[in-house]
Length: 148
Image (tube, rainbow, N blue to C red; front, side, top):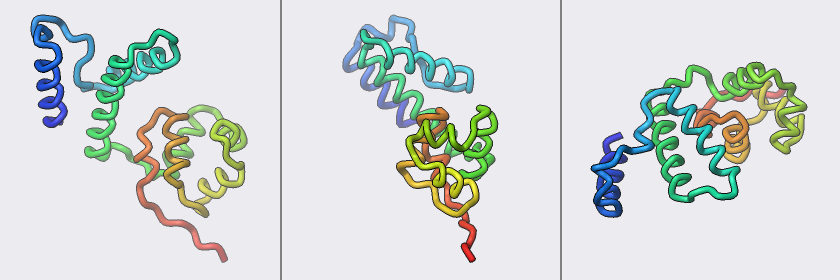
């Protein structure tokens, strides 16, 4: 995304004038492997007691930028419910285990998977955190089944 490059370049020269002479530890994320690596680094930094807030902030920005670009390319092949079901299966989880991890009722999970209830923003944020997926992937519109 051009905007991020311009912002990062301006910030780099304003705050770190000698940075152009150094090798950058982090760059704009271009591959899934790089994305996964940065997510793991960020997770470790956040859980460590001596974490550098600037490094956490930079990694968060780079990861968000990649997620935004991914969403724009619309690479999510699944609708929100199909994605959720796929993630549950991929991680060998039960609906009960997911409900406990997300601190929601098992009935909510079942209703979402049966297209009886929408995925709310709050639930989307919990799902995103649990499965390491951008929350917007769970907020795509979809049709609910009518209750008879």
